[in-house]
Image (cartoon, rainbow, N blue to C red; front, side, top):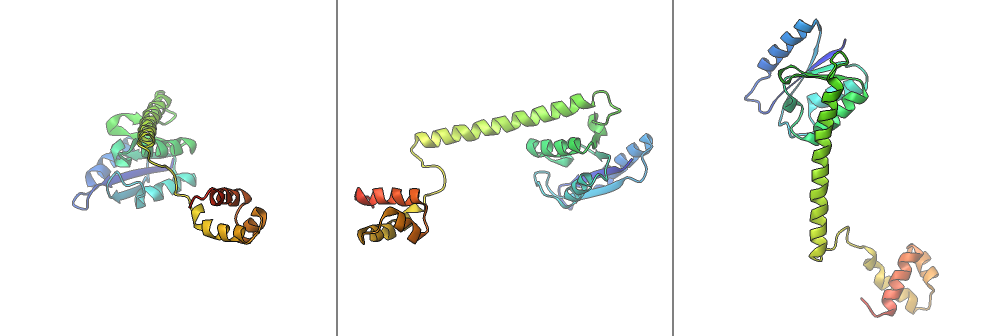
Length: 197
């Protein structure tokens, strides 16, 4: 089996030594030898981390069977990020083992699928809450009259379209000349004819 240990501390004033000792002892009890270690010294809220990124590259290559971490919050503090990681591990048939929290998603653990499902359900619940907050904020902004989306860049062509139409060119000829879609040129022509600027 290819075992990988993931160790992380938040600041360079801390060390991963205690995590490493505990996880190495756990691997020895399970008979897992030659575990590779991936370490990070960064906040758990940071999505991209050198050690974690390298570990996930190894997972994608099929070089890891089991990831052992000290605690779930060592992998990340954001539920969506954890769900993404766990989803990717599940897709590559990589087990996640967190001895201190009784998490073991390996096939040898009968409750593994239940644990994965619970972790993913909690993450999905978090995503739905975030989505509802965003939609609620958008509805409130619309009610206040806020225009959403990118600002229109069409009006920068208004003067050119007006000059072209005033010189007697058709909408089609104006669209071709200015490199605009016919529908956009037509909108501007309507605006010109109605006297809007």
